[in-house]
Length: 119
Length: 119
Length: 119
Length: 119
Image (cartoon, rainbow over all chains, first blue to last red; front, side, top):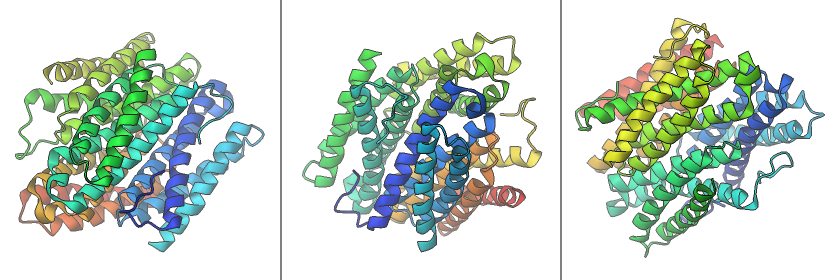
């Protein structure tokens, strides 16, 4: 989506941007879904975790999109928050919406960890 | 990317979310590009316009992703800012990076206008 | 907080930035509060409205902070979303947390409307 | 500004939220200022660093405002990015605008570090 000649980003970074962008969107959708379902899904800490995950994914994607050299710090935090969010969503795994969110968070955590290490 | 069963969004809204997400990303990239190129590209008002465009596109995409009923107000503002940004980028049309940004802004403006009308 | 010599913003705009910044923060807090309280407070549309209100307030404050000439479009949308959010929170007025949020939204809506008109 | 009965945040966290909110605002202003001044101020990496600093400060403030337990990860990244931004701005210290931004970044880095440690 966002590839263009002038940027010269690695394929890994391109994939990380995609993963962060998707994880952001899925977390925003999942908050709304959890609020509709209620109960354990809508516990305050769970919604807060999803919201912080959405925010850090966006910050991380944008740091890479603008080629900022400090992106590794943001990616490191993004990996940690995404892992926590994946764990929380996995605990509701029988719900396919939560499994979908857990998967997106796990994928994003993996590529952000690599970015943080490579900094 | 973000389609899932529980949401029941129209195809038009799905497309608008995609356009906003892409326009956000391209504006963030274009700011960095313009800062590298310098000169007219890097004028303060141009960079500010691109940054505000990136922000409102993100706000607009997220309002639709979470199914917020007030999304039309945000989409209306997004259409106006994207049109202004498309005009500014079109004025540097001989530069393919700017033509690419103008195109993304124009596409986003069109679908946001429709969303704002349909509210 | 954010005044400095080089900017030359009007007193009205300074106040609008403060109101948007405060309304953003209070909406983010109120989402967490509503999720803890549950029931009518935590209905999906109410949480979505608060989240969109938080986002557009931030976008609006930042557009003014960077002196973007298109801030009026964003302020116009911000006024509309804040008014809707104030109405929703006022409906739970016996709860002082919601009255506090309604008041912040109303104040932000008023100053954003002025900014939108003055554009 | 954002204190209310229902939250029970420590005084240190309240101060950290204030520092992040102020640093976000000052970074957004400083980007616009640097773009107006041009030259070394407007180098692409400097503008990118300021923009990423603004984003992570906002994400950090919001994580604390909503009482998210993972705020420490975000605060840790915020401290690192703010320190880098303070260094970059300090290098242009003879300019009072840059000294002001460096000071806000330094103050934010210090309180975010404490939050990250205390997690």
